[in-house]
Image (cartoon, rainbow, N blue to C red; front, side):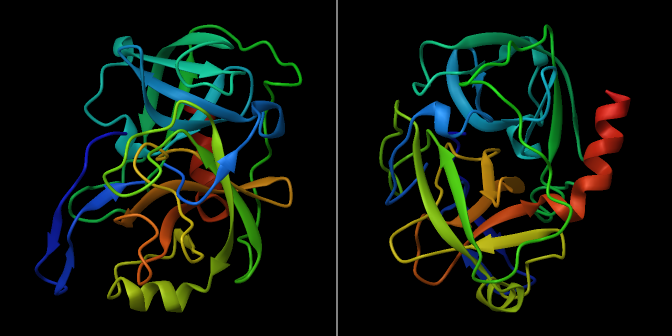
Length: 246
């Protein structure tokens, strides 16, 4: 997602001078075959956000990636390491965003489920990933990938990038954001490494399971502010219900 948000939390005394929906900073190029669950959510033919393959008809992304969007303007590209060509390109049929996501009031419950117009063809470059049933412990390494920007106010990457980050303990992240981290969020950070603008909605993966969806951060790779992700294990019941409903 390319929109750069500037958010002022007056009631909490916290200024996000350039809060953005989270491209990979400090990462390396990666083949889509290494992360075959990775998808690009595209708007009017351009990369808009990341997304994750749940099954051959459903992908998961961040709520802020689809709110106020028309499904007819959205497509999903899978099976390519490039955001602008190759792989399979499928139109979006409809989507459901979490009913408790209320930006700019807060950023919790930042999840959405998308149904595609036709099934994906699974192969070594296109496959799904299971949802985590428990949240990863602090210090656990996790891989985030996407086509976002390589730094705050830098250009996006046409090639897929990834970086490994350790999970940050919830209390430390809560303190960093002056208490604006809720129970349905997890955080990950390392010096000079982070997700960034355009990575929103993409996967945070640990031990072969989807543990997080890229949500937000203060700038990118900011030393004081970890990257924040929707906690898939905490939001798993809603995801499964939405998939059955959509």
